[in-house]
Length: 229
Image (tube, rainbow, N blue to C red):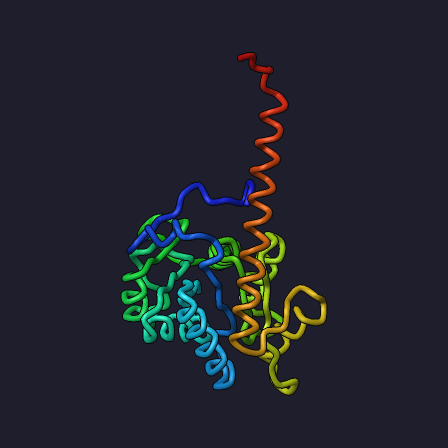
């Protein structure tokens, strides 16, 4: 993340989750005012992520993200909530019980305990939700939805981005459709599409890392003086 990286992450719960390979994490985000269609799709995708033994990453908000957390927990999967406030101050208040349950996995924030959420902190949180996962999928979002920022940050970081198409008559379809029209996102119509996106992205990142490490090894070898036996 370069200069945009947080100085520190505050964690409540099993911090060992964060040491898992990047390919194990999938971010599910979307509209707070979700429709029954969006909730249904979010449940299907979150259940698929959990069944694949991956970790559902979301922001703990109402709507799509809350459904993703709830489904991961209900299916025995793992989930992480990335917060825009201190990990000791569950927000939104209506999700206090849910976030307490999520804390059996892990709550993550870049701001210290006691900090309250602000608009700036919600905007900044988007890059963390994107960076923590190999792939991000957007399920419903209006043109002005903050969840769109997560998808754009993921694209900028070279992560996989997926978007779920919706009814053309629904304002909540505008965000995903715009990502698909501009080529930012791959179409995700079902759990198989999401699994394929996560697998492809995980393999690509692993290959890039091997190439980077191999290049570093070659550069070091070239710079080392010759040894005689």
